[in-house]
Image (cartoon, rainbow, N blue to C red; front, side, top):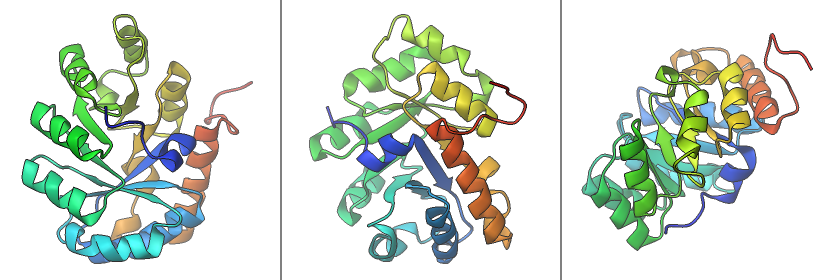
Length: 218
């Protein structure tokens, strides 16, 4: 096994997926996220320059954030993520080769999948958690169904997770939620970073269980 996810990620139960047009855009957004209480950010390889920028991101945010590298789909990308010091890696696919290499390297990995066969294949191979993707297509009740045959499986839903569904997934037993657009909004397109901090604070509160999603009463 690769072991558990990093402590800040597990404690906060929230991973923010930062998908920018260019790596130069990461800094200001990650700064606002950190100020809003976010403690785990996945920067993605669909953003040009992510590997080259990673050392400077670690220097700037490593004391505050767990920094993962996402959209890893090849062994070459995984090796580079290990080399630059990612705290964890995320892949949208089910790949035994990626999981086995991550296990060998001792780096936490969260592979994606949707079907029970895909998710269990990664979990049984040693993944630290499995990413139900796209989570919006199944909903939190799916985790209850998975827990029938796989009672110990660690699930991180991703794709279409907003504050309402984040609370529901966590109540269903997810170890964390992976959130992108519903939190980031237009932040990477010149949006108000103060508003981003406010959204981050709300998601942090929801995931900590200290705030109920809109529309829910006690």
